[in-house]
Amino acid sequence: MSNLKEILMNKKNCKSVWFMRQAGRYLPEFRKIRSQNPNFINFCLNSKLSSEITLQPIKRFDLDSAIIFSDILIVPYALNQNVEFIKDKGPKLEKFNIENFLKNDENSFIKRLNPVYEAIKMTRKNLQKEKSLISFVGAPWTLLVYMIGAKLNKNEINFEIIKKKKKEIEIIYNKLNDYLCIHIKNQIKAGADVIQIFDSWAGLIPPNELDRLCYRPNFRIVEFCKKNKIPVICFPRGIKENYKDFNNLIKPDGINIDYSIDPYWAKENLKDTVIQGGLNPKILLLSNKEIYNNVKKYLDAFKGLPYVFNLGHGMLPETNPEKVDKLVKFYREY
Ligand code: 1CP
Image (tube, rainbow, N blue to C red; front, side, top):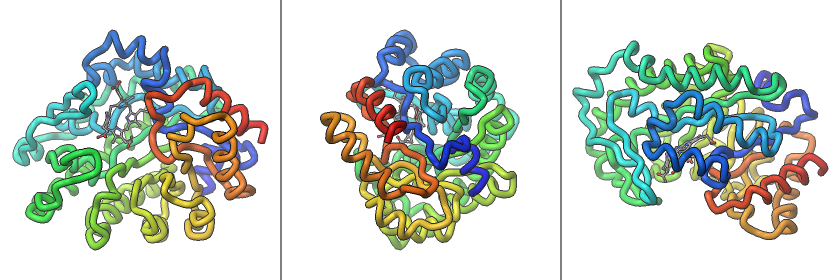
C-alpha cells in the first residue's frame, strides 16, 4: 500500500486527483480527433494519437495522474475476437469460439498490443516526472460478459448462460488470467506506474456467485501484481456492502468506490487500503455550489487519510469541461 500511496499521492500530503474517462467525448479536443478516426479499435492502436489524447486532460486541468487512452476490449481484440463499436450502441464482439480462443499464443498477443506499449512509452516521456501514469485491464468477469455476449442491456445479463457454462468459464478464466498478467507486465515494462482493474459489471453477479466469478479472479491478478511489486487498484463496481469482503479478501493497494457507497461507510469498513473515487459523475452536471458541496462530502469523510479524489464511474460525455476545471481548483484550495 505504501508504494501506491507514494506513487499516486506524489508525496502531496495524501492528496491526489484524476478522473475515470478523463480523456473522452466531453473534451472538444478529443471529439475533433475522434471524428477523424471512426474505427475505435484502430484509434486506440494509433500510439501517437493515444498518447496525445492521454495528455489532453493533464494539459487542461493539471491532474496528478494520466490514464492511458485504450480500452478494456483491446484484450479480446488481441485474442483475435473481432471488436466493433457501434455508434450510440456500444461494443459488439464477434461470436465467441472457444477453440479459436485457445489457439492464441503469447507472441501474437503481445504483437497485437505493441501499439499500447508504444503509447505508454511516448506518454511517460512527455508526462511530468511527478505525475503517475495509470494503465488498466478489465477483470475476467467484465471481459467475459462482453466476450460471450451475455449482456442483455445496460443493467442486465443472461445469467442462465453463465450457469450452463461452468466448465467452459473456468477454462476461459484461466487463460484470460494468463493473458491479463502478460498485458499488465508489459504495460509496466513500458513505463506505467499503477494498474487499475475494472470490474464494471461485478454488480450483476448474484451474491452467491461473487466468490467464483469476481473475488477469485481479481485475487489472482492482485497476487500477480503484488509478487511483481506493481501497485494495483481494484474497482468492483456495484457490489454494495460486499466491498468490505472484497477488500478483506483481495487486499488491493487501492480500491475505487462507486457512487452507491457512502464515504463514511467506506472509511469504517475498507481498511488498510487507499480509497479512491466515489463522486457520482452526474453531480458534474449540476451547479457549482452543488458540485462543491458534494466534493466536500468526500474530502471531509476522508480527511487525514490517503484518499485519491475521483468519480464513482466514468465522466459523462455531456459534462462541461469548465465544471471539471472548477472542481479541480476547488479541490486544490479546500
Ligand atoms: O468516442 C467514443 O464513442 C468512445 C467512448 C470510449 C472511450 C473514451 C470507449 C468506448 N472507451 C473509451 C476509453 C476507455 N475505456 C478508457 C480510457 C482512459 C480514460 O479513462 O480516460 C478506459 C479506462 C476504458 C475502460 C472501459 N471500457 C470500461 C471500464 C470502465 C467503465 O467505464 O466501466 C468498459 C466497461 C469499457 C467498454 C466500453 N468502451 C467503450 C464503450 C462505449 C464501452 C461499453 C460500456 C457499456 O457496455 O456500457
